[in-house]
Length: 521
Ligand code: 6LW
Image (cartoon, rainbow, N blue to C red; front, side, top):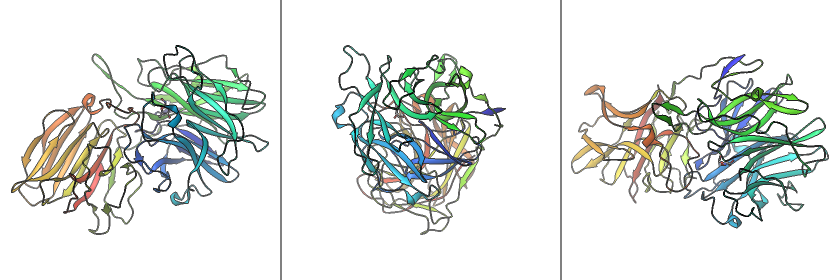
């Protein structure tokens, strides 16, 4: 039956999935955002609901001045013996050329109660460096850790990174290695990563994401009759499928597998939805999203999506059409912030309240502007639909000229556009600051609240309403191309977010910013 991809729209890359009875749980990478490792739940693989995060405490995740694309990479979720495990690595910097010897060590957190955010353990770090880690429990109880890092002896003349899959056994309680790491997969593309190991019948399977996460992205499979150390034999049809650079779905790869209760197999994977423009392709504003495709087995080899290119309309047994509504609204009825709001970085202090002014989100702007690598007072949500309007209503009466509060279109700390209220001498002004080009100001003398809007589509248009003008007054726009500029350092691994902020420049904002609601329409 037909269904629509992506099944989890908005920036949700590197999906990993597990089933426990009738419940599917899926985790995606969160990069520089906090809380980390979002967990989604579904009973039918089509309707997914965010149920919490595995990394909610500063004791589990310290991200302070990351480059864009730093933070939590490729999470894996597994279930063993009544406990859920989420495995991750956290990068402060993204510099593929940097010294491998100081790469992060991956870690796992675990819980018996996946429905309770707070129940996840402190991290247990692995004994070796790497990223895209996977844990595999063999029938005899041995636990294998596979991870990606650069080969100790790179191929002479290799152009690219020589990212390769290494495996060792570990002591689960301590994370310590109990065997020498063995290289089990390197790719002629120079990049093998995102390993996942499974057992099905008499074979072990090793899935690897290859060719890098951009246009060369693809997925390979090997199998072994002996065990996770190999020998591994490559499948007859690698890569398992290939999406070109001319379709509505591109850069596909990094898959994880699950079997449903009826015995059907499925893969979740990442892909991007670029937008066709007259003279070529525009980058995706969403970043890399979570797609779902059926898997069949032929001669004990997996056939993903019948070996065909992955499209926005897909077909699979038992699935159905479901439109994910664009409408979403938060009226800050407290006392807890609802799920799906993210901070950039691990916050250093609690700088908001949902109780001080009832039915409002009150932000006490901290001393960092949005353009520095540190943690600003800013709450963000992922853009999931191309055509939508983001809207909020703000009360803010700044006493200082060095403070501002408003709404933001957020790509990273180099590229973001804001519409915010400031003070300029005796005037209260609204300033639109596009990520490139000159800012524009208007006076909003009245003491009233201001409604701020960002209309999303083929460009992002910024406007406002006051009670003096119920009509929207548009202040300017940024093109999608400008809004998604690649950062000068780091990597464009994330997707567009929209949010609320308040800041002082090197000083705290002494008057609070109160938001009455935030919504997508
Ligand atoms: C992910 C790795 C990758 O960990 O991108 O290019 C990283 N490679 O597989 C972030 O998604």
